[in-house]
Amino acid sequence: MTVNLDWYEYGARYYDPALGRFSTVDPALELYYDWSPYCYVGNNPIRRTDPTGMTWADSTAAEDLKASASRQIEQYEKSNERKGERIAKANDKGKYGRARRLQNGINRNNSAIDQLEASISQIDEMGANQNYTFEFQSVSGDGPHYVTQASNGNIVIQHSSTALQLHETRHAYQYMTDKGNNFTWDSQNRLSPTRSYKGMVNWGLSEQSAYRVQYAYNPSSMPSSSYGSPSIYLNYKWVGGISGGSYNKFLPYMKQYELINRMLYRKQQMDFYNNKL
Image (cartoon, rainbow, N blue to C red; front, side, top):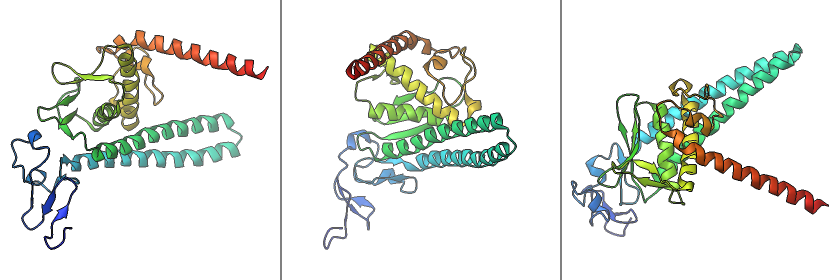
């Protein structure tokens, strides 16, 4: 707080709580030309926050999404407790095969928990990032959902269910953290992979990741694939087999990527053994 003025220093601007206004214009005013450059969070402090005085985002929707992921984590943890009790009983009765199957179930649950916890952390990172403003857009239907860029520069995450909201939020996070120029905006301002080798490989890996968190939240939300039923361990091949999609376009690049990785792994093994001799 500034001396004698009772203003709050937000970093980019000073805020006068008596008036509910900033003392100077918003440095990002060109992104919000419909609003006064002196207003605070679009005149909606109930749903929005502006920790630096530069941009605001709808934090309530993000917190709701995190809460949904946390509730699903609690369900997995309760399931693990029940399975743990059954494992103890199975071992007492010498039913070791059943105990192993139950343990595999716990391992799958833990992998799902890892996915959901990662999403919660990523949502926090997205909210703290000062280079982008993210918002959610509810759309109808089970058709394609996208991450788009609005005319004001905001990154818009489309969704029609919580599972798909987590899926598309994972893509928005991937865009935010991309260091290799693997994404671009198409003619309709939708997030798309670049058509380079790296871009296509990144597309396969990014969809693999997004479908894993979607599965973690709600397995019944998953589309059908020619590679069989999904699991928390699904890979890019399963994604490439989704019917009616265009994911099969990255499959040739991913096969080449796998081949290169196998060759590098074998070379590392040979180098390791040669150094031992």
